[in-house]
Image (cartoon, rainbow, N blue to C red; front, side):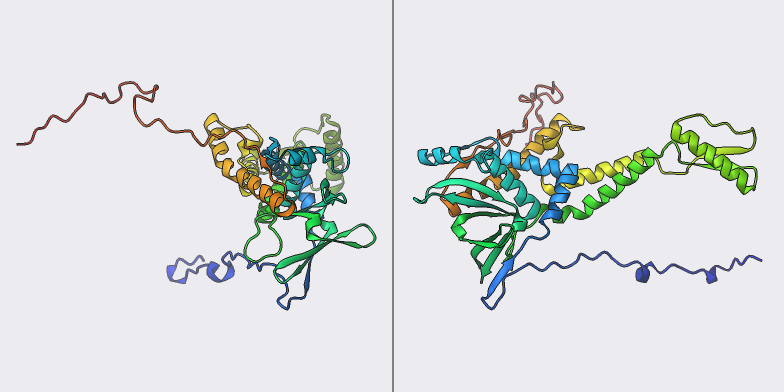
Length: 359
């Protein structure tokens, strides 16, 4: 017999069984305190490149930021610098701009990027050769870089600090490397990949996902009917079953719109983490106002990248240039009165005044 005594009611114990979310602590990678040589490697570079090449949003956001940083050209007041940089060809088919674009992409993806600096006997710059970070070892003593070593396939070749152009992404504190843009967004990226893989499986098998209710318990008949249904689905054919022997109903599942909105949310989140408004990479689903505001928000982000790269070139290699800034929308001013707002007509006439006098 049912018991209706409310004094015997119980509660769940979520307080002790469901832990609060706690952000894991992150210690900065610092050099040895005893002044001995500290070696910095980049073994996770291939994994980071895997994310870059495999995730469309990362590929698009990183490329967009690098493009806005360096792809509008550069200027210099030094005629000799202009002649030298225009002759740089990297591996033979590169240009100075394409090498800088490459350098910026690697910095954002991996956290540090490197170029070998080639000079002639007179010390004049003749070329820049990009080097993938997994083939670089940075040697640090105390808090300063002592030298670099490059793996040539057989051994580590020592290079002086003036022979390498080295850029670091958003280095903080006393850490000895930069920070990869991918690290902060990895959780969101993985969630998006999981959701997209699930949706792809559901879409691929959409015509087959269902439940068949048979009016028989005979395993042989059920197996035979299942085989006929499977064959029909695979070949896109009709399936015929005797009347009142089986009923096929759709497989219970959440609406596709729910899954699509979740995927879209995660994709937008990835762009936010990279600091690149989605309207910069694509106009899909973007209004005119949203596009302009995205441009304004993006301006200080790509400008920082330009300034950082300009200073790396000047401090490390005495190359003094300025990357051309894209057109700015930062000067847009709102309409502040009715006279300037041509779309507003006589909502509040200008000749209305308070007429109460005081004695």
